[in-house]
Picture (cartoon, each protein chain N blue to C red):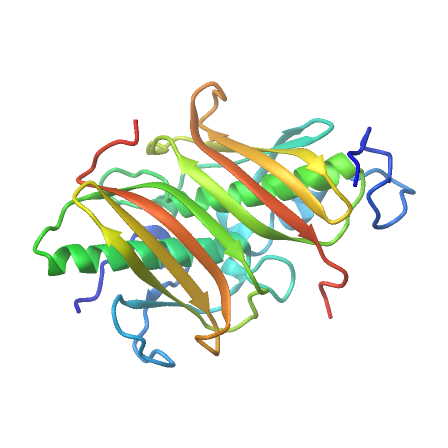
Amino acid sequence: MSDTSGPTDNPVGGMPVGGDKFDPEMANQMMGNIGHSGFIGMNYVGHGDNWVELAFDWREDLVADTQSGIIASSAVISLLDNACSLSIWTRLGYFRPQVTMDLRLDYLRPSPSGERVYGKGVCYHMTKSVGFVRGIAHNGDPEKPLAHATGTFIRVGNMLK
Amino acid sequence: MSAPELPPYARALDIGVAKNPPELIGGAPILSMPFSEKVQGRPGFLHGGAISGLLEMAAIAAIHSALIEAGNDAPIKQANVTIDFMRGGLPEMTYAQGKIARLGRTMANVSAFAWQGDPDRIIAQGHMHYLIGGKKPD
């Protein structure tokens, strides 16, 4: 198993590279407006060779506690799950079916009432079947994180069978 | 055991205390989450984040129940969570229950398990650490 040397290389199996390169903004437009991601309202913020950043706005029904207004930790999991998943396809340069194998979050501090929540996922290593990711959640300043994530995604053959 | 009061996020996902669990396992409350557009990931399957939400709520319900039983209604704060996803969540009712491994004075070690039709076929499990008494992780 070897690392990819660039997002357009394809030493890790899967679909052949061809046609348009994977576009995380477009992918989020398709996936982020429907289902659970659409319910939370995940917006595309930015991406690089191996990372994708998404964000959602504070909302009354996304809180863990009515009095304090802090965001439910589970909403942060959903955000980082999506950002990390997109970071793997972004690094690969193309889509390959995968599912989350595991995801760990360390909650450093609560996300305060009214604050937009950002989640940046980074794919730091790829193998033929596994994408290794790290993530960070913050309220606008990545130097002041509210959560750290680490996880793995596993490639699956046919998700729709 | 009294029904725990669920946070707005749980209510938004239609998570509730299961009235007729498919099988009573005993111990902590069993929570349920019906399938809907709001919890769907890839077409026809649950989103991992929604399953995670159900697991976290089940873990919190387990601690609250245990604390109330112990006569200690202290606030709790979650320090971390690790979720393993084992099976794709199908478009049907999902259940989850927390299990406390240790409830100490300052922290609790909790696991939570999610299943659909068969309680022995776990679709995901979570392991969480909670601080008791509102202490901050730092």
